[in-house]
Length: 567
Image (cartoon, rainbow, N blue to C red; front, side, top):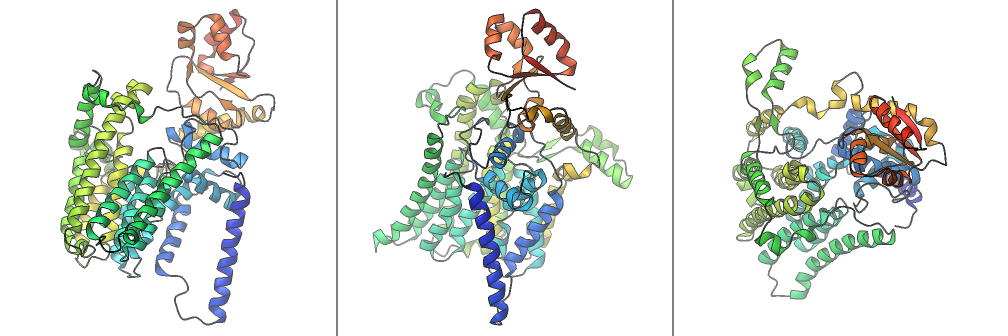
């Protein structure tokens, strides 16, 4: 907020090193008897090392990374300011994950490094795992199996862990917030601890505040129901009020910040979800509703990558074992619906009910938790349906009808509850090793090679090769101070990812946010209108295979813009 990100980053890093150095000096000088590095911290160090070992040399590859997350990160690293350039898509998006990646980039490499950025995302997506052994109980087999299943759960229930998307991070923060409250015996203290990740949720995405409210609701209802608040009412209610105020203050701070930066939201808001629309929905609502119901109950849309493709499995088995299970080639794909995941969560709870109930000594407290979680899932699903029908539809009818990113939005909440149960059950005395191995086996059927797409191919991915080509071809263009804005024009493809690759690679040159196609320009606009539309751009970039027709049109109609051909 105060524009001193780089100073604070190096100050934090220096204080951390100095603090650890003093700790070591004091430990050995006074011959202290306690463990030098506690078991949960050792787990975190191992996860930290594995994250960099596995992802340190990977690259950004997902569509939305180039439409926002990677662009916002590069803007931050290049300018050392949150809005140093202020032309990313969705400028109203909070950026707590971007700040974490910025810290890692600045302290490890000093500049933008994609592998370090992805590793930072993975580290903090897995940072909750040491909580499962917070009581220092070293159940190594349980720990290893639980870590593996939780790691796989990212892929199955939400998005691949190596993407810069905030959805996994949202799930982790909500799950950790719930775990804080139910694991800490002093509930007044637990409320304040839980408020920290719930407040951080508001800085992940605009929808983060909804997850904060869900967490506060579940915790608040349980706290009020199971606490004797009649005695010392103000003292008992005060921690709940403070927790709510912390969440609201954090949420409000971001709103104040973007208003100071004069950043206006470009995405539609939930203000279009009105009582009138709900009671008398437009015609387009019904097919979207039917598609959503099909997705939720029958897997019409897969949750994350939770889709078993027998044909791909057949190829993998043949490649690595030589066994050809030809009957799998024609088998139908198997998808996992949200309902199946919910039933799976219920089965986990029932199987480990003795351990779970030990955290709820108050009468009916576990029943209250179950009811509030169920209502949260139903309420969130209904709201998500309304968002698709009334908000997304106004942005793009195609994506609303397809329930675009349904798996990410629905998976975040289910994944949070999955983490929460996993944290509660780690110390279970039941021998559920075979149970968890069975679950692990089922998850491993879900395309294991999709966990490390950047590692399985020895050759560079096509998307990365395209970006390297852009880097080499436009290196001199980026250094020209008189060029500040560039327009990428495709012939007729509004979903050409080249536009977003250019947006990322050409930064600090600003590339058009909205797709511009030659067919749309010449069909919907006059020559003078086209010239006016392109007047704000310093250069025009075309693909080589589409350039002849477009260049001829520009030459015949007196366009004098500098044109670059992307080879």
